[in-house]
Image 1 (tube, rainbow, N blue to C red):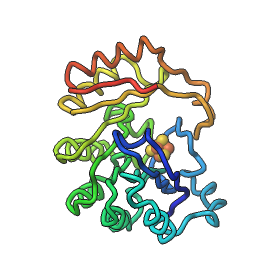
Image 2 (spheres, rainbow, N blue to C red; image 1 turned 30 degrees about the vertical axis):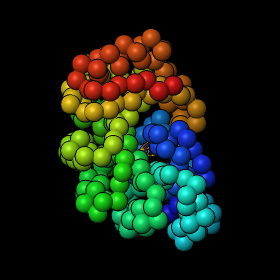
Image 3 (tube, helix red, strand yellow; image 1 turned 135 degrees about the horizontal axis):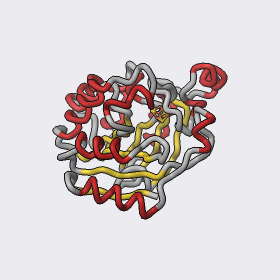
Image 4 (cartoon, rainbow, N blue to C red; image 1 turned 45 degrees about the vertical axis):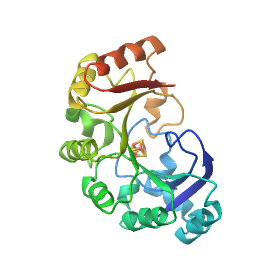
Length: 234
Ligand code: SF4
């Protein structure tokens, strides 16, 4: 594991639970709107390598928090890139914490292995665009086949889950949103998030625009036709 940071406490990132967040470094996507290029681009990661946190230090921290925290969120970058993710999640679970995994969904085989091992209690998957546009948005390594496979795996997982959709006016046309609604039909839970212009992996995206609150609510209504729970997160 390459662990770039640990946030000791959050009430916002694990639905219904107090949690710590473990941030892993590196990602197989290159989303233009990514707010954390320093955790994604190898040339920036190389500069940070001395500040990575050993897994043993994370486990020591968690041992001190037993009984004080309910869960641990493992997020990225993209956690499924790391070959030792599944045993790492197992070690967290063995310490009595509920485990939430955040993923971009491009490695269904890792999600499947973590589910089979019984190491996950909740999954949040970013669903970035319609399947046909994934490579254009997330880069050459994005696989529509694998994204689709992960969506189905998560829907059938039997654990808590959410699909998170960050909407950008310049990227998500009405036709594309209609397509996404069809692709996520039957999901239990979809959260829509407004894009926030800030530091972005591709500087051109810093000037892209968010949908208004009213527009976000109208898009949420479209998803409600086929998804049980839909909410807009500000
Ligand atoms: S999936 Fe995209 S937004 Fe998330 S860390 Fe990777 S490049 Fe950034």
